[in-house]
Image 1 (cartoon, helix red, strand yellow):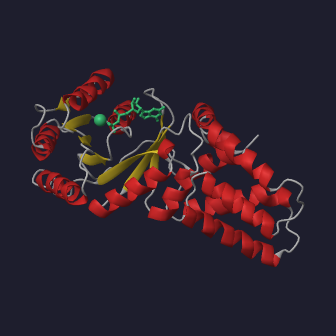
Image 2 (cartoon, rainbow, N blue to C red):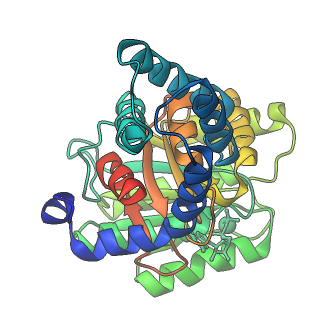
Length: 317
Ligand SMILES: Nc1nc2c(ncn2[C@@H]2O[C@H](COP(=O)(O)OP(=O)(O)O)[C@@H](O)[C@H]2O)c(=O)[nH]1
Ligand SMILES: [Mg+2]
């Protein structure tokens, strides 16, 4: 049994273990083939390992970094056994995640000195923004925080309705206008309302249907600027939601959004039921933006605060 079980809630860990099952079995299946019949880590094993990592959606750059680190270890210890490879990979991956994620977070929380604390949620259609907002609102409310949602994805009526469904489910207020209205105006109204209600957290849903970078940049810049008329330093967090099951596509989206706006944290969704969980490692390393939350199911409880120790432990257990 791993010692992490003692630190973290067993229930949370079980959900994570289950969510990462497919990624794990695919990764270790490939890894055992990569080292089959080999007792020491040599060039051939390293070549195979490189292939395993790339095909597990860790991403080319991050894979090269990991391989380089293992090469350094091989150079020091010429008889590095393949049975030690698991442990070494685990250490190197935890090390990579440390560079961006402090990794100590285990609880849903917000800084105490910002009120209301404004989270702007961005990302393309279908990645799980609205669902993540609903789950987050639920967690914050459970902590006794007063939450207000803003329906600034005004492109589709369904988008507003979906957020409304979550607001009803979690029983938190929502600010919305009709479909097609100005997202910045909705964001403004939401912050006004939140201030009047003395709310602790505001979560703003946005549209991801902006295909070109200039449009996207203009739109998000405008939403931010208008929010700042109400709360000077808003948004405090720009949370980019990425669909983990899309693998390399998630990298591409991260590239586009980080070019269009200042993204301060990431949520990687749909890690359940995919074999592409390695994407979390690559994205966290490549973009130097902390992964704050991970989605491991469609249910209201299926959002977790990302913790690198738990993640690596679940993956390598
Ligand atoms: N399996 C799974 N499905 C998810 C997760 N997060 C979101 N979804 C589903 O993804 C779909 C799109 O989500 P939605 O929140 O509407 O995406 P949006 O367009 O970005 O707002 C919905 O069917 C959600 O139930 C997750 O962590 N796991
Ligand atoms: Mg939505």
